[in-house]
Length: 110
Image (tube, rainbow, N blue to C red; front, side, top):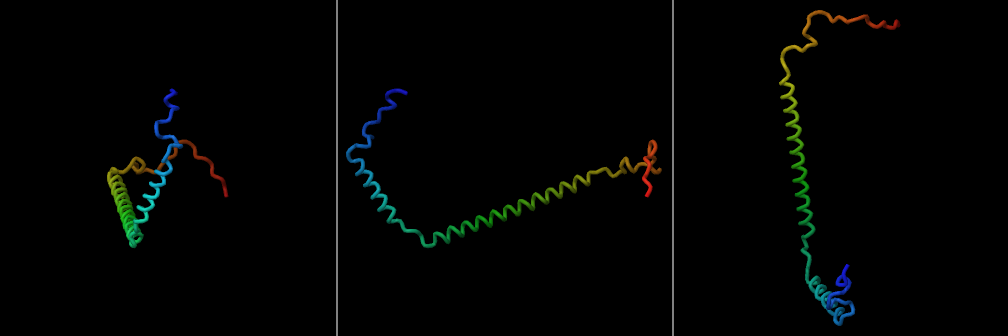
């Protein structure tokens, strides 16, 4: 840090003459300005109506998005199932009864 970092700028010391008066004048001006602002009587009703409209729209968009995703998943699933080969699989290719290779395990008697 240099010496310049510790030195306050000119005219910014807290004990400067007129500092409190300027701040007080600014506060008074803002107080008068804020006192002249009157709220709209329908402000709450208008804001609530806009909020409810946005909420309904958000729910509608979500419902449509869910329906689209469900429909696409169903259609893709049906398409994949339709792509299965029509010839019989390896398991059902023979006409003979299945034969176990090797001796079977003994079954417990009741």
